[in-house]
Figure (spheres, rainbow, N blue to C red):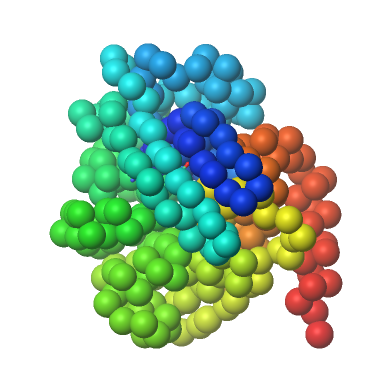
Length: 299
Ligand code: AMP
């Protein structure tokens, strides 16, 4: 079933203890689309500038991403510069240049307006809302956000949360948004703001799926080398939503399996810079990791 994503398509400059990359392909919607595209047909809504390389567009198209909602306008593409030091779970943002996102007002192609599954990737919450407003009767809406928006646009973010079924965020953001250190209490607080499911990502410590009456946890897939965690959250959400959007059934069992697919897609992503590992992932690679995941948690 179709899955729509709105988010950033970016040129990232990232440094980790394993190397660095300048103006590499990145952005929340990019990571999400490529991960989710392994499971379903993704429709992308975003904006890039005149400097966005044609080869990146060709790559996204080659992964089957529907780009009718990708606008190219005058100006520079969104840029993000990040640094990871010893703690690979946390990016230090060195610079954020919104550029073409500053004036972006998404206009969905009419064929997108009946998309059943929607993911509002990390982006200005006003833009997230502008997208949901244009979709008639979506089956499921999920969203992600980050510290940048939690502190700069808290009211706009709350309006989005009121419209959302699943909220994805990392543990630091959950504490920041809920205003408290205990993660379960934070999740309860967030559930009261609108979503019926909260997914808290904890980097190498895995992810929690918290609903009113249940809690589930999945570990991160263990890897000896993590080269670049950028996009881990978005590829996690991509695996989760990609799997979920294959059917209109929202059972606890499917949500749990979605969490595992999220962990798997994130694990591929962090093995290389930019989308260099994710771009080569095949269905068989995913299923192989799924089987070894089973062995990892069975006792
Ligand atoms: P994550 O999955 O959290 O590691 O997301 C990393 C991606 O988010 C990078 O590729 C960035 O281009 C993008 N990003 C960083 N800051 C922002 C922001 N303020 N708004 C939208 N996207 C962002």
